Length: 111
Image 1 (tube, rainbow, N blue to C red):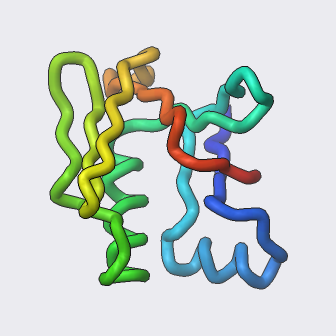
Image 2: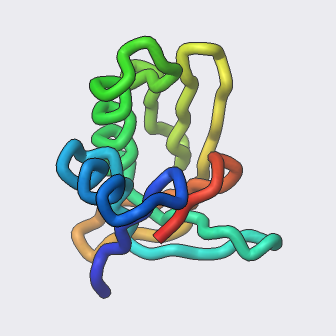
């Protein structure tokens, strides 16, 4: 299965190219959908780290917090710079043994 590139906003092709160039898109192993039909990324912790680092670089005064990412007890945990905390459980494993997490309740994602 090919990775799925996701964006945090609905944007035109030029904006997408910028997001791709600067690493601001999220690369998901696959996607799921929530009860409202919104996309929910299924990703590794390393992909989440790369995404948060890229956004911190892009907006150093924003809320993205690379130091707020921890993994343990079957969960990926993230706390942004304002104290907003998310906990995502393992929902599967990659063939290489990396756990996969369902990133729900974190905004709306676009393909």
